[in-house]
Length: 320
Ligand code: FES
Ligand SMILES: [Fe+2]
Image (cartoon, rainbow, N blue to C red; front, side, top):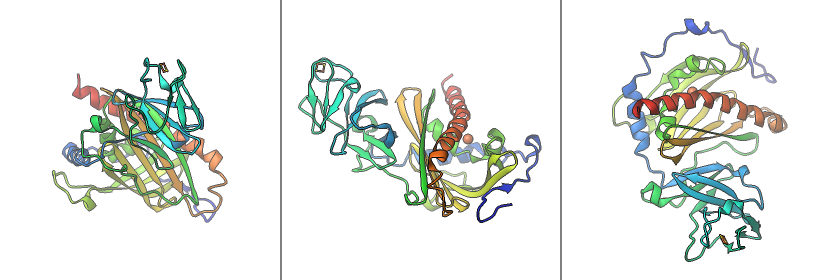
């Protein structure tokens, strides 16, 4: 059925209960070892705050990361700034302030804060990679700081559509990452989205593994409607302890990425910020972007409703 114009194929897959059980392959020690390696990678104290598009000109944005209250804003020069969320004067929430020029003005008594800060209010290193906003919190991370975050490789802007979806749950970032390091749950746990998932290769169930082999490769069909779907081969890697990147390596949309970022909000509370950059050499993807973006976001939200239940369950088993 797939053609130059139509990427859909009719999927021939057994009913849900007649699939081959995946649990014999989904070895807990393998997932644990992959997670331990991911958690040992450096992130240079960088945390994803949200989508670049979440920051509107002239309007500050309030966020909390690992219990640290933050305010973010973009000045008229386009520069992205992040600083402590409480006003150094009497503690007003700076996210209620407003942006004038490049400065953030507190609503309570008009104290104007510039991106260079002042003695009692020091901005944090911040980075806007065009899709996501990042902040560096050295006291929270406690690692050797990196000058910039580890930004995954993404497909070119031309021919791509990007969307970012956010959710939050009662868990830690490692529970979000562990969920993604169990690709075997795909067709069983998300039958509405995936069919015929087969893990082609996985890292060995041992503590050490060369970086090149630390990857899961999966054949899967993404269900679009009913028994129609798009078969792809995808790989999953963890570039840092709070990120899992799925890259489509062959099939339709090759080069597309789904980045899952887990940002701690407070003890036992974590945000999932999922950025999709879908890429296709077919003409017209960019034209359908306004239609596709909400669909991609809705699909991410639906998957994450279930995956957060998985992550929360993992967390609650650890913290009864
Ligand atoms: S609390 Fe911000 S200026 Fe007074
Ligand atoms: Fe999942």
